[in-house]
Every structure is written in structure tokens, then in C-alpha cells.
Image 1: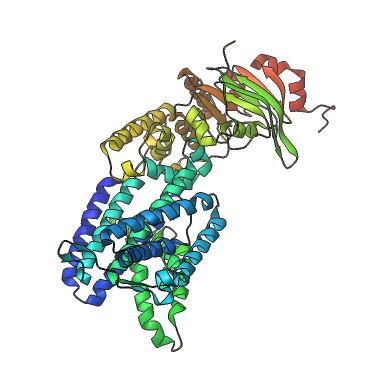
Image 2 (image 1 turned 120 degrees about the vertical axis):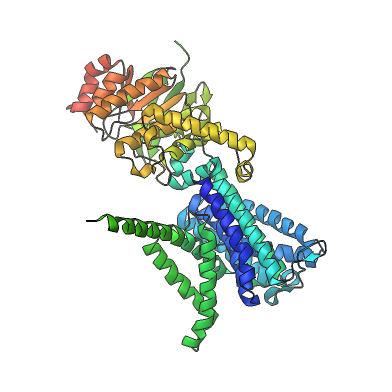
Length: 331
Length: 258
């Protein structure tokens, strides 16, 4: 809507990304930064599907996992170049999303949610059960790092720059899409599918394409994950991960590309805090209790700031600013 | 007689055994303003939904410029030049007034995901054309001063005009307008009447479903009266107004066997 503002914000994001690793030197903190970036890429795609086109996916972790496993398998089993494997993983995931989306995007609302949920579970079970290929529950190790000539992305700092370069590219492309004929068609589907159809928007085709695009984003994120940790295992790509992505999208603001990185940051940091704090509060607490926090967070967001923290926050700031200006004018 | 722009022959639609349209036929010539009237539940909006493809026919056929429409999805019919507005407003509340009308320009553009994502020169040029055409359509209905506002902020009457502008941005050869006068005050109805004539002046044939008799009688050249899903009468406003069957249907008669 405000391309000028978006360009400025992108420049700001670029500057922030350039500066963060100069101030943050702890490997642990940088690696959290990398994960926020990876999560942000998935979340941006989910925002396009949910916030713009108005469809739901509870199975995006499956595409994330598909990207990760495809990248891992192509490099470790076939000896492919990691970049080629990344491209292959994205192409493969696009094919799967297209083939899956064709039948299930005819469904609406809860039915679509159930279908994507089921797909997520099937994909998870496939990662666990195809042991010869995926290594099953013990995972797939020895995935090579990304490199350009002699330059290897082998430190957290280098990978931070790579990942966030990817985030900036994905944000820029997505903003362009949103502010275009395609983006308007997607929002029209969300606004009134019937009206969009009668204006000539092939709603089924648009839903399918945006679903596929978001799956490609998730595959890119998954591939980055695989080459960053050089190890993948099923729990990263299970149902809870799908829910996490939905929460990230909702926290940031569903209908806002800019919200996605903030949502990803908020939820990723929250997860770290919970993992740190919960075992101290509850001696018996195990790994699953983040889910409770996600649930609470989602409920609170939907009740108090349904447009997400970024849009809601900006609005609150504006209201504060207006109130501040009004005070001196009063007699 | 010139070949009809739109021809519906023996069109039928039932909802779970209830006949909404039971064998209605209709011929619309290019360049006319045709009104469809009839009591509530007569099947007027259902007929519109059948023509625009939101509902599938249970029988009969609909042709547009001689081409059979049966089975074509709504988007394809829009591509052939059939535009419409909705009785229950379907404004895109999540978009601005201008963006609403820009969606109406969808079929005139070609940019896809790729062109949009990488802002190709062709996509940018196309975007400017879309914006200009959308402003022109808004100016035509007198809404251009609200172009930057959220569509949901418009009062009801202006949302109706917005739907007309959005459909006109398609440059349809046939425009289906579903009860545009509902909820408008007399001054707004008078303006609407002028607007509908101006639309025909642009070369767009208008098919109008309306209850507001002043608007119908003052705007339409011919009127089709539906009752219980069937054509009760057809002709000029004068003929229809004096038709005993029409008077009976509207005022109620003893032999009304429903």
C-alpha cells in the first residue's frame, strides 16, 4: 500500500541485520537469530496463505520438513551440490504442494484445516518410518554446509547473514506480490470469494498458486535449517511445529508480510524462555509444555489484538501520539 | 430482430424440491435496459445467479452472444463480458475503494506471480493502466474523492455505487444489477436512474432486478415479470403496468393457488 514506506523499512531491516552480529557475539544468541530468520521465511508464506488468501494450513511444518529432508538426502545420498539440493528441494516441495493443493483447496474452513493437519501427520510419520532413507527417529546426519567457492558458511555469524539475506529477499518479493494484481486477487478471495469470481478471478488457481508458493518458502527455510545444523530429525517437523508457525503468523499479524519476522522472533524467543524457566517452576515439566503457552498466546492475541502485534502495536502507538498531541491543545 | 446478446431458454432451478425458477425464457438485445420484476421469491436473484454462473442449471440453456454458457464457471463468464453487482453487498471490506475497483480490472491485466514478484517493466506499466482505469470508473459513478478510503467506511448507498464501478471496470457488455435501489433515498434513486442510463450510453446492456417501481418504470425499456419462477408477462412498462395478471400477482387475487 505504501511502497515508499516498505522500501524504507526494508533498508532498515537490512541495516539491522548487518549490525546485529557486530553487537551480539554469543554463538547461542546468534543461533537463535538464525532460527528466527528460518522461522520468519516459513511464516511469511503462511501469512500469504492465511492473511491474504484467507485459507488455512495446519501442515506447513511438513513442507518445511520436506525441504530439509530433500536437501539432506540429495546431498548425503546422491552427493549433490548443496545449492543444487536447495533448488531441488524447493522444486520437489512445489510439486508436492501443487499435487496436494489441487484436491484439498476445494475444501473450506475447518475441512481444509483438517486436511492440512492430516497431511502434516502423514509427512511426519513418513520422516519417522522410512528408516532406510531418512534415518527414522535417529535422524539424518552429515549434511554438508553451503559454500561459495572456498567460502564456507560454517559459523553462526556467516549463517546469520545468509539466512537474513534470504529473509530480506523473501520479504521484498512477497511485498511486491501483495501490492500487485496478484495480491489484490488474493485479498479479494479473502474479502468475498463470490465477488472475486464474478470479476474474473480464477479463485481456485490463485489459491493453489499461493499455497504452492508458501510451500516453496517453507522448503527454502527447511533447506537452510538442514545445511545450518547438518542434522535433521522428525520432531522438528511435527504437528507442534505447524502450530508454532500459525501462532507466529497470528502474533505478527496474519495480513501483514512485515508482521511475520516479528511474530517469528516473539514466538522463538518465548520458546527459549519457556524452555529455560519452566523446568525451574515445575520439576516434572517436560518438552511439551510450550504448547500450553502457544495456546494461551493465541487466545490472548485473538481476543485483544486480532490484527496481530505489529498492526495492533502501530495503532496503539498512533493513538498514543494523537493523545499526546491533543493534551497541549486543551485549554 | 437483431441476434440477442443474452438468451435463456426454459431455464430451471430447484432447491431441494422447491422450484425457484421453473422454465423461464428471456431474450435480451444488445443496448437495451431490461428490468426483471416480480414478488419476493419469484426467482429474480436465482436467475441472475444462473446467468453469472454462481448456480448450476437444472434444466434449459443460457447463451451469451450465441455461445452456450452451461457449465462455465463464473470467472469464465466474466471473461466473456458478463458483470454483476449483488443484492447483499459483496464489497471487499479488507481493501480500499480504489483497490476494490482495481480488482474489477483483473481480467484486463496479465501479470502473474512472477511479474508481480520481480516488478517487471510490463507488470509496472500494466499496474499504472489498472490504476487509471479504476479512477475513471470511480469518477463515472461519482466516488473518486473516496478512492483512498477503506471500502467498509463508505455508507451503504455508496457501497452500492462502488459495486457498480467495480463491475464497470471490467468493461462488461452485459451488466446484471441486483436491486441497486434497496435502501436508497429518493434523491439517490433519481441519481441511480441517470447512472444506469449513462451505463447503457457507454454501450453496456443492462439487466436490472429491482423492486423500486419508479426506478423500473422510468429507466427500463422493457420489463420481464417473474412469478413463482415463471414468466408472467413481458413488454414495455406501459403494457406490463396494465397487465391484469401482473396486477393480480402484485395485489393478490382469488385464483392465486400457491
